[in-house]
Image (cartoon, rainbow, N blue to C red; front, side, top):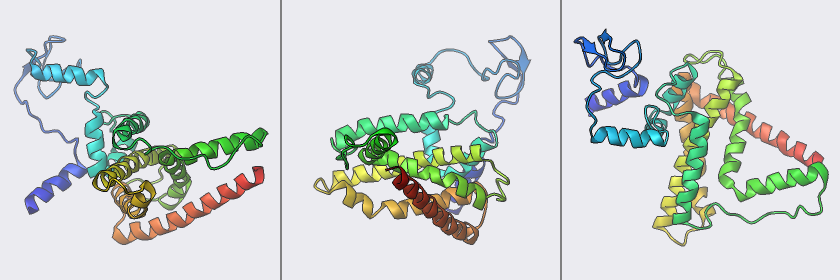
Length: 274
């Protein structure tokens, strides 16, 4: 078990350190050159590419749906088991084996929405909280937007997470593994975290609805969401920024205080327009 855990930790931190599988000279069928290594340095074709097999059929179908070398399933697998390291790899430029994060967020939401129709027809539905017919101008569009968020709780959570961008940038500004990161990097950090929370919370919710068919969605999520969010954020930030247990813990506490203050300011600004 100790050896397996050591290999798992090695994979978490260095999943792209590919071993040299081919040490003999290879002939590239694409450009006709001779090279040594896993890929041709001139045209990029993989060594050993030859006859078409059933694996070629599978890879061709996966490429059709954008799941080839930058695999969506494999990126999701990394997002669950090495989330902070995956974010760090993308931010520092190791993007070749990672599915584009914004596209992944949209694709996962669509996939989970379709899946929710099978599990529960009203899972992503909610009643409109307020009639906006009497509002005009900015207030009308603002109320419409808030009602849309109330009808789509998953997207409301993702919207709220964007208030973590600036506090994260300030609190983790001089982190050991990601020093002086930028606000655009913070945007992609929250996109990854949003995708992670969307997958985990939705799967927990669906599992609870399957195990207890009469359980209300709000009651099911109430017991898990806060603990799950705190746990995942701790893992994400610890792996991403490189602080220890205590250094990550107190910074997350300060982060949530700043997050609560940002949300409060946003609510006060909304009240001024309504």
